[in-house]
Length: 226
Image (cartoon, rainbow, N blue to C red; front, side, top):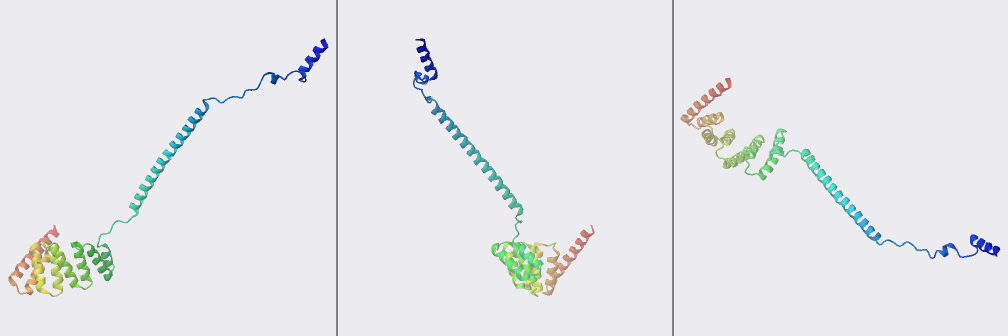
């Protein structure tokens, strides 16, 4: 009987007899997922999405700032690099200085076409046409300028000098007479009136003009001496 007990005990120790311990423990239960894990996963996804949106937002902000900075920089660069705007008669004046009279007359006419009421352009055109030996066109521009500003004594003086050079004594006399009335202290106006009045036989008016001319020369000499 002891041998039988020993035999059974040996068989249970070696695993050849008796039930297995794993089987005796019953079926193994697998771990069930916690009901809270899906909620944690959703929270993590929401957090990732918010982080991605946050990064995208600030990325756009940075790009906008960089774009604005580049635009401002380019604008300043272009403003500094662009040449200053030219006056309407600058091109014509440059051609006149270079002695290229056909180009000068072409450019001044273009400028006047754009700004026909610009008196300074009309006066400049008169000078260019005088240099081009086209006094008739110079007179036309001066007369147009005088219609715009009839109280400008300088325009009347320019007109009188051109008419005098053309030997139109009567027209010169009219222009100088008007100029001396508008600018009584201008030597060109008074001297022009004296000479043209004398040439036309207006002795009394010529004498008065010569007297004023002498006074002006003395006054100018005194001013120069001072």
